[in-house]
Length: 239
Image 1 (cartoon, one colour):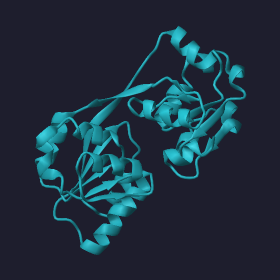
Image 2 (cartoon, helix red, strand yellow; image 1 turned 90 degrees about the horizontal axis):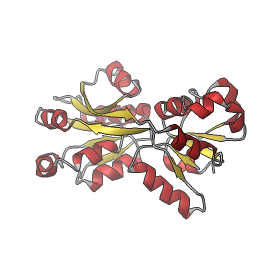
Image 3 (tube, helix red, strand yellow; image 1 turned 180 degrees about the vertical axis):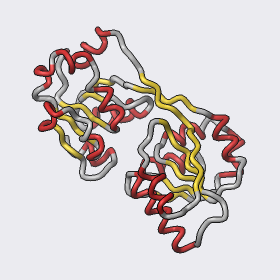
Image 4 (tube, one colour; image 1 turned 135 degrees about the vertical axis):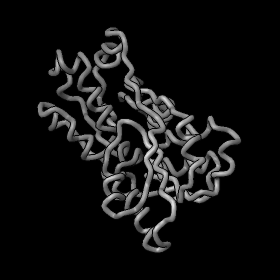
C-alpha cells in the first residue's frame, strides 16, 4: 500500500495498515510549514470561535506552549473526528466534530449560530494553503463573519528518481491512498506514471472523496474507488 500523506500522519497510517496485515510504502509528497506568528497574532484578536479543517492545526498549537492556555475554553469547530480529537489532545475543551468536509463544517457553524445568534466577533478560521473554498463560501453566503488565517503551507517534497522508482515499481503497489486533490495531482505527476502508465493498470486508486477522484486522469478513472465518507476509516474500509 502506497501512502503519500505528510508526516507524522503517514507513519500513523502505516502502523494502522501494518496492524491489518498490509505492507505500507511511505512516499510523503508534501510537508507542512507552520506560520506560528500569524496564529499568535490572530489569537490575540477578538474571535467568537475557532474553525479548523485539519489536525495540522493541533500540531501547530502543540508548539505554542503556555501562550495557548488562555484560549483553551474557546469553542472549536473541527472538520471531522480526527481533527476534533487532535484539538482535544492539545487541551481544548469545547470541541465539535463535523461530518468530514468543508461543507459539513460550515453547516455545523451555521446550526450553532441559528441557536445562539450571530456572533459579535468573527469565527477564526485557521486554514492551510492550498485549500478548498467550500467552507469560506458557505459561511459568506450565510452572512456569518469569519476571518481566515493561513496558518500553514503545504510544501512539495521531491525525491531522487531512484527513490521514486523504488516506491512505485519495485514492486508496483496494490493500491495507493489518495487523501487530497493536491496529493493526487502530485502523484500523477511522478515520472513513472507519466512515462510508463501501463505498469499501473492494476493499481487501485483509493480516494478520500469525489473531489479527489476528480483529479484522476481519464486513463486511470476506472481504477478509482471513493470512500463512503471523507475520513480515514472509510478510506481504509475500501481495502
